[in-house]
Length: 316
Image (cartoon, rainbow, N blue to C red; front, top):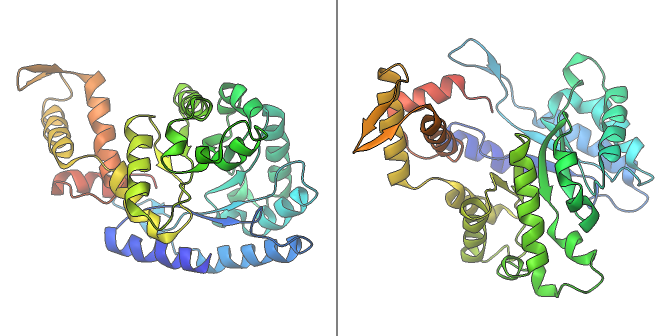
């Protein structure tokens, strides 16, 4: 966890923007019987690692780091203890709370109620929730879960999803290439991504276990971004972060085209325009704006006037 926080700070300095979240883990990170001690350690790390706020071009203060915590599932004996300790002790330092193994809207409601009860002060209230979808039943309810107002993002929990099928999905379904060939896994990926986009939430792709093979990581990330409409992806090792960022970044040609169209549109007060014989209006402007947003978030080179705008206005 300390290495991840140090790497986040290092890449933030390199690219001038916080490049990824660090999720401190209580679910799989805590030894059985040591859940309280682990939660207290997580609180200490979140407090110590909270970088100072910086004032942007709007005069608004922005956090320079994004730190989250994954607690135990809502039906685990340590869940309430996790939330009381972590939200009560470090809620103001967190960007969200990750709830694993969510099965229904009822699970989200229970988590939110516990979080708000534990929140100490207004700064920790209304903390966003990220949820992990890890079973066939949860996939079936993905659209209802995504509609919950406190859910900000939904992640696909590949390994638990495969295990939930009692051996009916081969072990290859948990691998980098194999997870893109099994029909049940593919259906889960598309359902989660579609549910998120239907409700304006962020779909986050699952891990790749081949953490030392950058080519496998990069190809999985490319497929997740360009074929399955995912906007983010989990990493389980620092070596995976740069390949994921590269795969999720727009191509240089896409960035150049988006920059030219958006700058010309701004100059025309967002009226329709002719670009290389094609009509563009506000519908396509939204698309090209999102291309530039992805480029900024992944540390890509942008025209000075474009980067200046995002540096001043982009909400981390």
